[in-house]
Length: 465
Image (cartoon, rainbow, N blue to C red; front, side, top):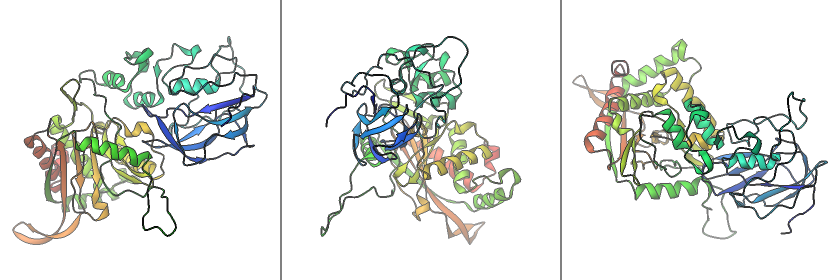
């Protein structure tokens, strides 16, 4: 492929839209050669191992070339689109792309206030390059493309060195946890603030979180990926990439790293189902997502509060058990691109209405395919609802970096001994898998028994909370 050296042509490189990602697949182009684009316009959608992400172009111009077709997996740092800048000043021909390349030399251009690529869920700036003049001296900043690339790599633009250095997902995490990045001591290369730094600032009494593999979903049926078929063939081959590829790698790593133990309990949830119906009529819960999952999630949070050692992770390098003083509750969600596990940050602090709001937002965002990478990072404990598929129970595999995962089976009307008589009751089976390196049988059994006891007598949500 011939590299363009026209002085007015700029190349936009595949950014690192998540932490540590090395590649992304181009799902869809929204522009074609000859189209006019403006600063902030989304030009393509890509899929990483964690989520689908829309990418905006950081300057005005005309599309000269799309470097790769849809369906191509491209390394981070590789130029994916060439744009002839409208009235652009001469720029040097781009060097060979590197994922960690330093920003180009500064150019005199107006700075786009708060400009970031559209990591899904972050929003997009609607401003154009025509901005009202500002008072005060002008500042010199990197050209927009290089500035955005620098921001994605965790490096602030040259003229904004007073701003703490952190990648967009880390900034989002800090915002979610209420942490001021200016007060965080960085530990990353070149003074970059990492996720561990943010967690340490948010919970100083806890040991640092271990660096874990990307969060991955629990095993369950997922929507099929795009397939390659051959006329007359007796087989169909499904490319393994994106979310499915990350899931496979994470599940293999988890299964052969953490010694899994799974325990089961069958419980009468008739009273819980009645409470669900009552809550649907409650004025405070009107318009909110109220279902059995909401009360099961609350029951698990109460059980964790009563048995806090279950909310931990294993730091292999330091040979330490890291007990978390917060609960980021993961919820497995089926999406068109496979099963993902976004989590509700600081779920332990939420009231029932707040938890209902968070669950509603999490599910709707996942179904729309707009879950951000940061929403799938930092989980501590997960719930997977296999009952929605009519399955009685399962033996879920832990997400890497977590110590427990609760599977919910189908809730069915069954004969049950109640007050000495056999009666039809709403019954389900719960399964709790846990990491036996840090959770022994007693602790795992207590957590599962507490969840079951709350679902059997939901008034315990008040007396035990």
